[in-house]
Image (cartoon, rainbow, N blue to C red; front, side, top):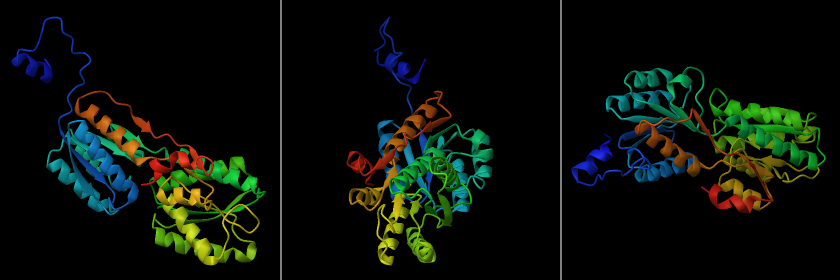
Length: 327
C-alpha cells in the first residue's frame, strides 16, 4: 500500500472500488543543487526557477554554488553525500574532476541528475538523467545563422572569429564543433581565422575582440564574430564600437552572432547590432529538471536525456522571444 493510501485509510477515506491510479507518487525528499556561480545570469535564473518548481513538487532544495572551481564542487558533492541528501542535481564544472565524487554518491545509493552540461565519458553511467542544452545543436544553429548572414551580405569567403567559453572541456568545445561543421556545410568558402578562449569572461571577451579587429584590420577586417553566448557577443559589439567598426552586413561591416539568448543579445537584436542568436531558456530547463527530480525521488522511470528546444532568433522574430530571453 502506498503512503498516500495508508494516510487515506487511516482517515477512513478509502472506499471500495475507488481508483487512485491517477494520483502521482509523492516526491518528498531533500535535494542538493550543485551549480556554478549563481551571480551568473543564466545560472542564477536557472537555480531560482528550480527552487520555485521544487516547492510546487513538494521537495526541499539546498543550493551549493561554486565559482567554476572543480575542486570546490567535488568537496561540495562529498558534503552533500555526508549529509545524506536523497538526490544530487549537478551542473558539472569539470566532466573529469567530478567523477570520483559522483562515484562516491553512486556507491552511497544517492542518485545523480546532471544539468546544463551533458555528461561525458565516465560520468555518463553515473547520471540517472540529463536535462539541458544540446551543445552541438546550439553551436550548429549559430553556425547556420552566421552562414545565412554572411551569404546575404555577399561574403561567401568571409573571415570569421569566435569568442568562447573554456575550450578545455565541457560545453564550449562541443558548441564550437557544431558551429564549425555548420559553417563549413552552409558556407564552405568561409574561414574561421581565430578562436579566442576567454572562459566566458565578458571583460576578457571585449579585450580579445578588440585585439582581433586590430590584428585583421590590414587584411580587410573580420567579417563575422561568433560570441558563444550573448554576453560574449555583446563584448564583441562593444569592442567594435570602440574600434570604430560598423556593425551589419555591408562592406567593411562586422556581423555578430550570439550563442544563446540573453538580455544583452535581445537588446542588440532589436537595435540591429546583432544578426542572430539561438533560443535557450533557463526557466524551461529548470522546470523540466524539477519534474525529473520529483520523478526520481518517487522511484519513477525517467529518460536518459531531456534536451532543450533550440532555434534561431533573428531580427525578424526577436520580439516573440524578447521577454523569455531577457534574464
